[in-house]
Length: 230
Ligand SMILES: O=C(O)[C@@H](CO)OP(=O)(O)O
Image (cartoon, rainbow, N blue to C red; front, side, top):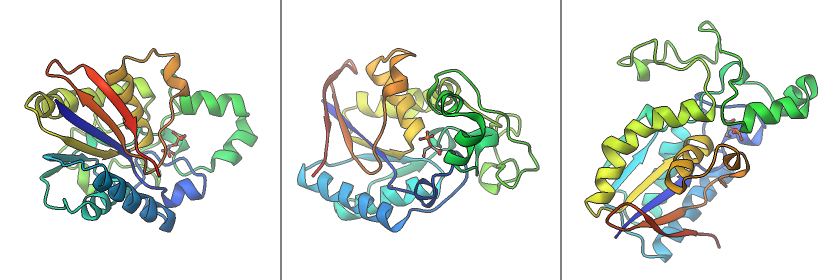
């Protein structure tokens, strides 16, 4: 039996400002730091011990992982960062205020962009200040693979190779794994793990800083799911 803990990063500065974030590398807010530390406290209280940690290449998720591991006395756990765990790329919406965008395009359109499984937001131009095409952290990625926009379907397609190559083999080897990532990259993983339909995934939300604990049998079937809160 192995355990997998998923944590969405604590509240970010752009969560607080209600801006579409995606691949833009914003920091945790003060509240987000508190949430990340509280996640570590809950992990410790529940006696969860990890063999491997994974996170994205975005500061808000990396810091959340570190606060949670530090708080549970496990900062030593081996960790791997991957762009495949990054937030869903929000395309041309990155950097825009969500309420202003709803006022301009309507609540329904914004809900479709945010939660539909397969509708793509408009593409982000490469010369935008919110583009990642010239970001050094993606220098060894084929520039054509760097997203210009993603929906949840595309996000799931780029998360899955990481599941197949890293996470699933760890769980099958009996390791306990923690992943600190993002609302939508974790919704994508949740869809796969729980076999949620394209329609039903629209209603699944991840709370910031709330650890979700799965227990798997040796065939990688979920035998238990628990959300840790105070
Ligand atoms: O802005 C984002 O990148 C995400 C997560 O904060 O927002 P949403 O809730 O719209 O998926």
